Image (cartoon, rainbow, N blue to C red; front, side, top):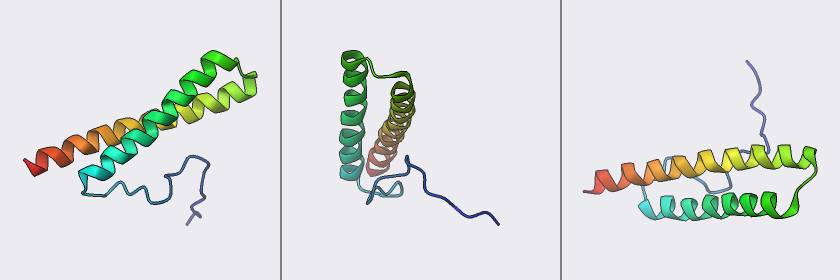
Length: 82
């Protein structure tokens, strides 16, 4: 059996995708939205080197995916609470 290896784009410490608290989802939406905004701003303002631009694009894609996850999770949690 293979060994699980951490990647640079794992979940953040204390980010629990199984949380049942809507406020956790709201928190992580804010975190990931800030990271996406930073990536957008940096890319448009700094014109990073190609290698850095590729790495930043990978991170931004990961952040956007997590942002979508937490938006969807918030919808699930608020529908359950209704």
